Length: 248
Image (tube, rainbow, N blue to C red; front, side, top):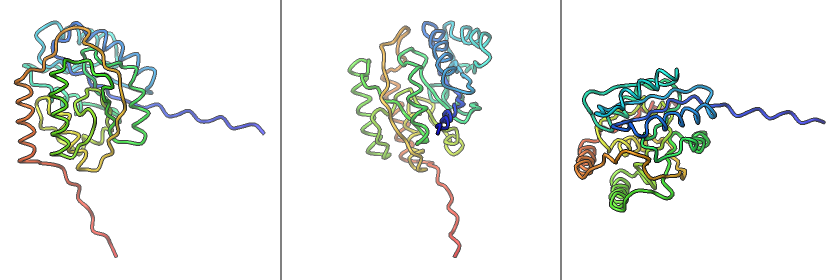
């Protein structure tokens, strides 16, 4: 008796958001690599490059990439509005059921999106954590402190809160309004998703040294992130689902 062939796993449809600020050295290679990776994994996909007020040739490069690929489109911010604002623009314009984002600095491997798509079958959010983080020790120290703070204050207990390699079900953003303009955005989304009972899973991902350009994170950004955390603590504005009374 012959066995029936197993049905192939359904291929996902993904909107991939690439926030970019002065990433002329990396954007082209990262976008091409991401386009290739999504083509292998997805039934349908789009790549949304959010140029956040770049002052180098990033805007022109992004437009050229959109001209080369029908799946690529560009959102331009003028002037620079911040990392959180860039992600918010990308997330709210996403058209596919799943929303992915990664930074455009070349520190992540787009091929590892398979790790996230495998995990999203049982979760609402899958976040990568950098198994061997290739950043200066000072940045790793501040990230450790921030992760600990977010866990204690908001109950979000993940290994790497601000890892810029995440996959969400788009429905998450139908219930969550992002207020952050800066680097607090990752923690804000996870905190609000946690309140709503969304399942958050983690997978280890590769982290590489920057391929070009330079980090935009400064001490002023760390201080503004702490201010945004304090504002969320004082005025949570956290979403609460209405529950219907049970009928006897």
